[in-house]
Image 1 (cartoon, chains in turn yellow, purple):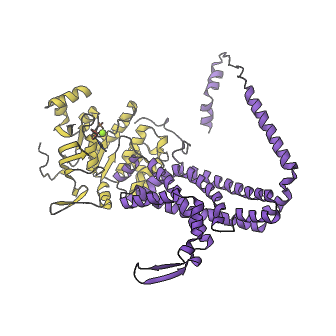
Image 2 (cartoon, rainbow over the protein chains, first blue to last red):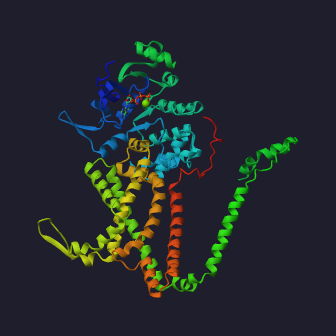
Image 3 (cartoon, rainbow over the protein chains, first blue to last red):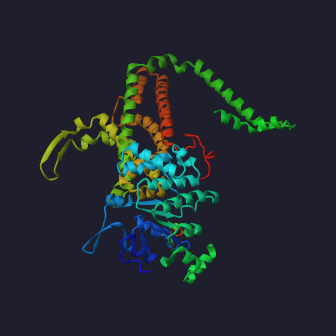
Length: 260
Length: 311
Ligand SMILES: Nc1ncnc2c1ncn2[C@@H]1O[C@H](COP(=O)(O)OP(=O)(O)OP(=O)(O)O)[C@@H](O)[C@H]1O
Ligand SMILES: [Mg+2]
């Protein structure tokens, strides 16, 4: 798989991306294409650069080399005559509105109710009328099974409920792409299922998703492709059935033997 | 609430339902004789204090009664309050700017903020007040214009920086240094995850600051700021350094000097300071409650998570 082939149905194009933290070379030439409607599941050992890659896609981290395109946007930069110029914060914010992100630690706003968490960005980033945003927020809460929790503050919700609110909050911006960074890793085992159900629902509705997770079962069931990363490179990529059933690289085999 | 009532006493209902014989423990509590000795000492001290307050003629309670609502005293209370509130407002506005400059990415802003705090925190407020009183000696005229170019406006410093303005500037600028540090600590107390979540949603920087970071920082900012406001109330007593002569301490002091009765007028001043402090404390309580929403564990909505069916 060459990845950088121009492809009409590609939503995300990550091209030869490198990332340094000081002298640490954390991403070492990542090429990855995610098609519209594709669910790409990323697995790999701790420290392999999975979170860093996701955070580069919405410019929470700046990349050191390469290009990331989401739709028509070149993330974080404007290219004029082959030279890159930093985008101003406002333009980066515009790009981020099309990309939803769900964090391992939920990061709900603790001073706002579940409903206000969801309505915040539509009202204050997009300028949607408060009344409409709240109505939409209630619909989204219903979709994640928490309609009765609209007036609860995050501290009054379980981890699984908080994560479902966080997913609804990201969806409220009508993103074209959703990024999930280990959304179930901070949850008690009995709460994982509820969150995965919401994500499966979302996948079936046609959302394009990049999901970093250790839930191999999720990858097998809803993943369109499985990406195995190690030490800052994509070691192997393919249909989940193939990668899981018949891994081509020794490193993949070794990792899978530990998690399966 | 009937549901809550039932669930609150499940032990008793089970107990009667099963009609089992259970011997409830009624153990003799541990005695604390030391505590009773302590209470006795405190009660005795209170009695002695009250007795001396009532019987010692040197308190001159009649003078206290005459002056506590004296028109000059009440006016002085007004000035003290005005000075406290106005300098706190000036200090807050400056401190927000200083704290934002300190956390900005611009090194010139960072350095300016640091230097401001260094200077105003590093010199006594008394010295600063004397300085503001002397500013008219230092700069007799204040001119607005282009540097080395034409002059547009000119003022006599004495008209512009009156004793009241000097007091406001002296107290406000000094306080801004302390508040800036409090605000900076408050901003730092908000986790990086909050910024990132807001950025990932595509909120602009100013919205993130005003709607996500500052409201959460307020929880950390309010208690020490309340302390500072109460401190400011009493620091206003130093404005005679300017000299500003209408505040509570100056007015009660000069009355005391006139009457040769310092003690009752000290009681008058102390009573007013105590009253205002108490009012400030009540205000602080309500502000703290407002910004504690979602944090302080108060149940603001029914927690029906137990009733929620699994999907
Ligand atoms: N802000 C940072 N500064 C310096 N080094 C960082 C920073 N963020 C990540 N790293 C380093 O980059 C490497 C990749 O980290 P990353 O968080 O992307 O790994 P990961 O694959 O998500 O791991 P995990 O499964 O534990 O979440 C690690 O060695 C980490 O120490
Ligand atoms: Mg990670």
